[in-house]
Image 1 (cartoon, rainbow, N blue to C red):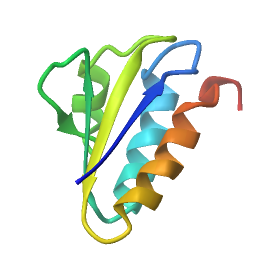
Image 2: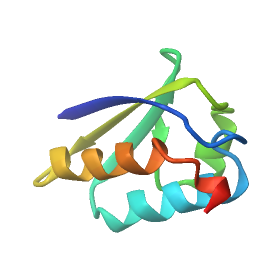
Image 3: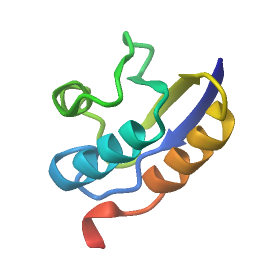
Length: 89
């Protein structure tokens, strides 16, 4: 299982548009991707409600995990996505 930690760069955190873009990207990986915050139970990264319920704010760290072929590459791309201010694009 691959794991990455990333700091949320979007000014509004993982809410609304940034959450939607992240969920779409996680879904497009075709892998089982999970996201968690502060040691809380992970949620399905392809669930918009689950991702928004995390309440991840700007500057907070989240942990991504994925399992399957290409998991490292998929997480690298998701980390790159979350490292940008998605609300300003």
